[in-house]
Length: 111
Image 1 (cartoon, one colour):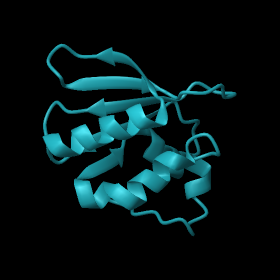
Image 2: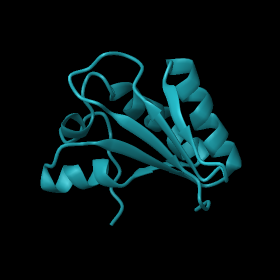
Image 3: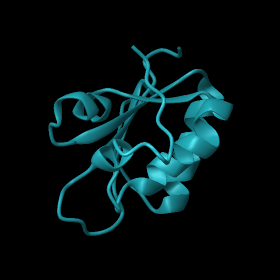
Image 4: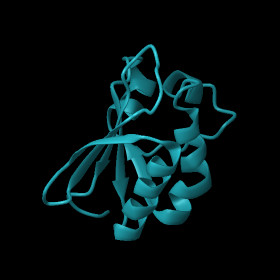
């Protein structure tokens, strides 16, 4: 089941904290327009209340992936891993937080 969140949905604040809310705003402003999808464990946490370890982003095309990479670069995220095949990119949040949050760009295939 797909679930769309908006800024007025209280569950958004269970997933995105003050350190990661800019990711949510980016998704609202650019996600649908550019074909960027947030899925995986962070969305599962909405249902089961588990702690978020990472944000998994999927893409509809190469342009969407490039848009997300550019956004993370502009926000100061550090790229910690790039798969040689270009199928997975891992970034970490650029500032000190109480928890370690990883952002994964998954591009094994486009959706």
